[in-house]
Length: 99
Ligand SMILES: Nc1nc2c([nH]c(=O)n2[C@H]2C[C@H](O)[C@@H](COP(=O)(O)OP(=O)(O)OP(=O)(O)O)O2)c(=O)[nH]1
View 1 (cartoon, protein in one colour):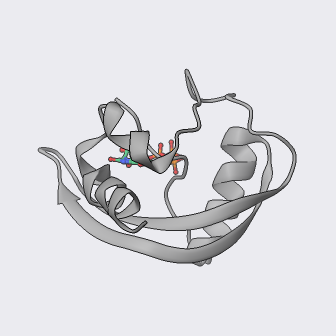
View 2 (spheres, rainbow, N blue to C red; view 1 turned 120 degrees about the vertical axis):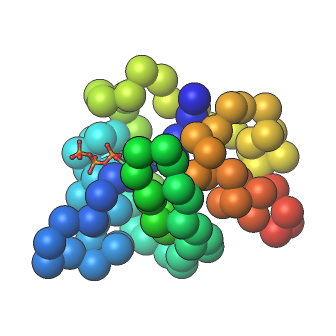
């Protein structure tokens, strides 16, 4: 199952600060955040997630899989070739369809 890099927003953070921190922690690189492109709430059996998806660009370093088993870059037309976490499907569809 594949997910976008990210994580939970902590107290006192805004969305963009949280994403920069998570990317720094998980991928050991630095990003500039762009726009929110999808906002979707998904009910899993045991919890509900509000997945807010943000575009970003790398401004320092190279992504390193320190906490994930694998990282891949995909062209948007190939995003459908992966099995995504259910909460991510609207964001994936949005990326595939917007260009
Ligand atoms: N990061 C991320 N989490 C996702 C996605 N889709 C999805 O269902 N999730 C779920 C998995 C986790 O239950 C939750 C996010 O947890 P996380 O482990 O990434 O967050 P975190 O780094 O703040 O974790 P922690 O400190 O609580 O361990 O959301 C996604 O695309 N990215």
